[in-house]
Image 1 (cartoon, rainbow, N blue to C red):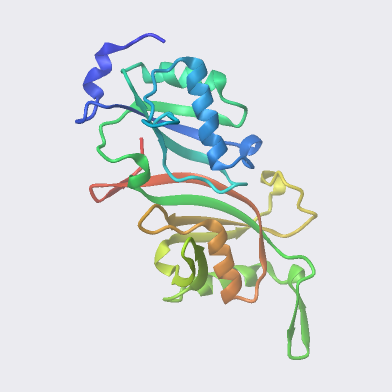
Image 2 (image 1 turned 180 degrees about the vertical axis):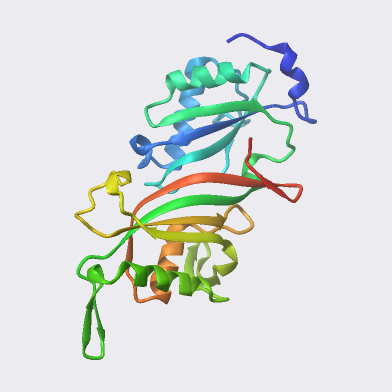
Length: 267
């Protein structure tokens, strides 16, 4: 791959050459773990001959930092990673070379030099999602002598219950972590949330069995300081309402960084 010395001025203050990539993760690779995604990028870089920097130690690995790893089963149009190089190359050439080697479902949309002292992972502050859900079939709840079939509940009533929950000052849920479980208040982590009934089911690729489908569009805090995953959000909704929402599909639509107090896209 040809060198592009004119881009050397784009190096950061530590004289490291960092290229940030923006890529998508489609249905073809949504069940691949984050570790396997890292390995896939590593193999692709080796095959292209890109002058990627390697870590020190017994088992050197390409120096690549991902923004906010996706859970298995989630698709995304907003994945980012920082790749450290040993010399400057044309970012577009890097993008094109990697796209020839990456499998279906992984595609780099853009690439550019960055000058940030902090890597993408440390900058992530917020993420936006589309969460497609349905009310569990045959969910029956006793309310005195009344039996309610949740599948036939009025769609406006379901939307109302979720909006009513969001007006509360506190929405607690049990979160599992490396040090065990603890109850947290996720209300401050929900920046924005909208829900609507899906009239057009063609957007749902998965089999839906004529269920009533709802799309939740959510902007959630993300990153090391505060992070709310979409599945935990749905768990909290189920806990604080008499609904039993089941996730069909989660799709990340955006990732945002906090740069000197300003919220913006990573590139």
